[in-house]
Image (cartoon, rainbow, N blue to C red; front, side, top):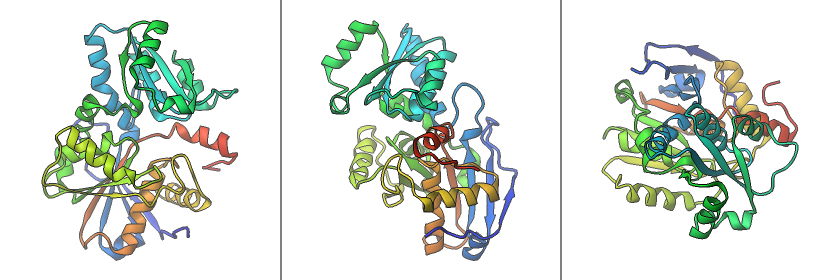
Length: 319
């Protein structure tokens, strides 16, 4: 059931990061007042430059390393509507690198807006059948692409690796220590891992999976263990706000996003941030957050994907 969030009042408080482009904006609603909790949104979507959102942090050290190793191109992976594919193409071009995108499934023409933008920024597409895509990291495929395109710097799907986590550890600033809960949507888990690594001991990190299935719990455990991030800090994952799975939407979700964005002037995307925000308000309504809690939601960007979703499902998110 679509939630009536009550009256919104958007405030721009004096909470701005030391690097200046990540203002945290406070959202005020009747529900928040009633539950006596505060909600702030860290606007990574406002990062200027070649790539915004969490992708800025995930690609930052990968691209620096690629150039330090003398590479002239990167190769990475993603679906046809992937934020990562879009951001990688733009960021690679800005860094003077060529980009190769291994795309899951056949290319469908005319290309969707995500792939159009990637192509305009110089990305070469290498479509791969969905069955083979599951084996994309096998040595035989990595060597085949080396034979076709020449030497490259490999960035995994979604950009999640050690260097990506190094970057996403920088999302939280000193001012963010004032919050009790850090909320973030989850795809491949790299941003969640970085936030968990940099969160303080009194903070609990909440992850909202955009993927259908309970496997995300095991994947996050393995990711944190692999990068030696297991500690005494608390975290909790929610796998019940996916609305049918990755890239799936519903009228309920769309109506929520429209209401939230119209009232707060903060745009959300229907793949990641919209689902996270829906989950946050549902938890607030359930009384999940103790009284006087201060919640920080990470706006990971991804707004470029709206045009592709609108084309795919033949609707307009923001009429």
